[in-house]
Image 1: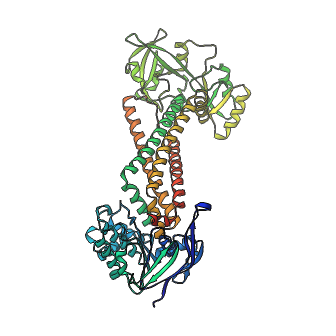
Image 2 (image 1 turned 90 degrees about the horizontal axis):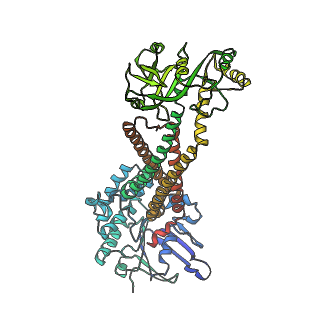
Image 3 (image 1 turned 180 degrees about the horizontal axis):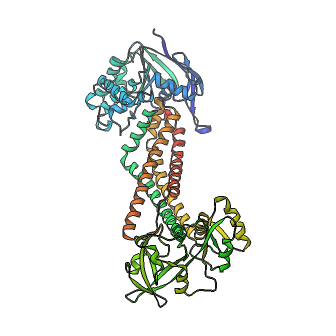
Length: 232
Length: 378
């Protein structure tokens, strides 16, 4: 087995108080390894997106610890945590969250701009990432002019522009038709994933389960099932 | 940080509708504020036109004088006493008063008469036509070519008129630093001719103009004048006294203040709401940036730079629009009393900084509150 990218121990998280309190995660532990494409699946409300948020350092758990490459991320200051996210973790959001008034290339350049690269240099580099995802000709168009699949690829290119060790993808196929969704995940597995990178995908789209290295199933805030790729 | 600021700039200007609304709000507020304060400054300068035009360093007057236009006659001994004060280089009388001039077409026109010291003609205006010594000629007057000049039917050298059945003749056309506030043409003559032409009360000296030997003598002169029961003011003090009178004892100041505050509120309302809406609409983008690794300081800088940039552009447009309007108005109405100064330009900057600060404060608060995980919730 490869080295551990993320290790979560006894993660607990609830929202609200009193009668309105909802427990999203109940003492969940897991590990994600470099070189694997780990799926977290489960029905809506099972806590998988909350788990992804906690693992990627954007939501503080009530209990438990999360280590990213050996660093306990929830012991870091907010600025240190932001720095860690910037350098270690790439995000592909369910709704893409592309900036509609920037060009596609400028959208992809954002992580590099956050890393203090000069604007022109970042946009130029962004074109190379767009080439990887096959969107060179769309570089100067605003995202709204692109199809859903193309926007998803732009979001992936943007995540890759941060050169992250860990790529987290939240429902990457939710806005796409079956073929496009499968193509996107295949692309990620073949082009993005490698032995020094870990990809964590939250999804309930069973059509892409065949691309997973491992699948963790969540239900009602618990991890209920772990499989090695083949889902039954 | 430059990249972040450029990102902020692009997000701002690419939303053309919001950006335009922001600019309109700030431009309108700056324009309104500058317009009312410029009018006020212009009126105040004109209210002190006599002081600016005669430009004597010190003025002795009755303590009850509230403005340059409301002189109270002083007895001749005040002039003699002033001349005997140590530290006074010289002192001369000046007369200012208003009367009606009968023009060639038989109509009457109110005029302001300034009577200069016969010996020195101290405080004489710069002549555009004619020679100042011609003022010693029979019935001689010099007319000021300002916005009110056409009311005397654009007189030339040699034009005649009547004042209280006395014949007057124009011997020169002058230029002065400032036109008067009350829309009456100004005529210069000698002190004694002014007394001869205008009906006068018992005391005739409007002001005694004093040239101190040096600045250190001014307090001593003031002290000596005070012992006589009169008051001596420097030129700036007299201008301030006049301004204070109009500002606080005529209702002008409070009205101008109300209008400036209204301009501020209008600008703040439009710009504040629009900017806050702009931030709210981009909240998911800020959350995405936060999730991707932008820290709070960078997000705050983005918002402040957007607010600051809008404020500066709006300020520039407001100043430009106000200058344009004043220029256009002066082309149509030469006596239009409006003038921009560093004071109201500075006030304008202060106002837009406050508008930008308040507008961005609520946006910054909202952005700092947003949790990056919200971006996962779609």
